[in-house]
Image 1 (cartoon, rainbow, N blue to C red):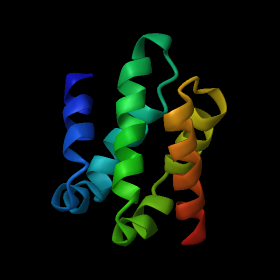
Image 2: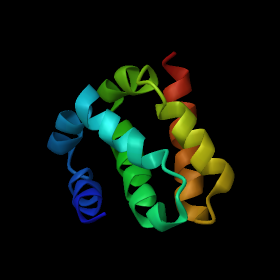
Image 3: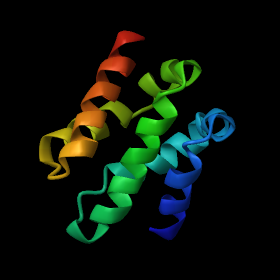
Length: 101
């Protein structure tokens, strides 16, 4: 959870968004974003928030949209999240990613 919090904080920076927009990092984030264990809720929100931040960089969107499970994890999060702010950001991110498919 602490590492995902650090990733989320770092992902606001454009240079970090470039580095995080790679398959290995995306796989880690998707794995945590997809974990529906209630005890993982905070880590899940950090992972999803990081994905949202990374998607702000247009250059990352093609690889993100084609990353296995990424869109599914965002859709799943948007359908169950009780966090209205993050839920709204996730919906906007889904639209951005679908637009590049």
